[in-house]
Length: 300
Image (cartoon, rainbow, N blue to C red; front, side):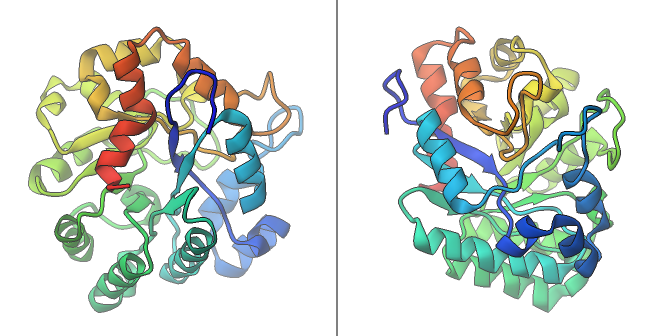
């Protein structure tokens, strides 16, 4: 895979949905009572354009080819119902089966299914070749971070060596429809109480380690760059990595979210790759962010 600067790129944060959801997002969500996803995913900007697309697998692969991205890790969503989690997990397993050389995937879950069913779903997803859990969000899904089933899931994730991606909202971010606050102290607590579990905090972790220096000591916590241009300026790459270290950051896009709505009509991946490449990071740091960290953490 050629990207113009001689190093592999893996996107650690991509969302895909079943074809039925792509054809009629609002109807699909209504049938499953996934109101939060519908609010976020079907929003439109002030000019009437959608905030995100509904890309199929082939569209994703073409976007990856155009940007020089060798592999993408598909993340689930923080669904409100366990049945929707299972449905997406089966879809992800099929995507990986069809494109094992280009796609890996994580599993969604909801503790409301109960202890036995939730742990069984984690094991089933693992048996089907899924390599992590997430993107999860207790705050958005409606359960507490000390939910006993969720805690068992985190312990099982450590045993099965499944990294756990958690959605994080920057406490200073602007308000928007569907925004849910995610207290940063909750993530510090989880990482401290589950030292054997690998956590990936999405969206630069809401800048957790820049706000709380104690988070720098949490060696089981990593951060992805999903949706970066919508949240921060290009300076975030150096600002964050200088403080935290390149070995703790994973390149992620949040595709098919349109990251550059003023420049692009639809979601694409090349501009974010170029933004990272142009950040001034040293080649070894850039290689770590673009691929090495993702490959190590997910055992690709």
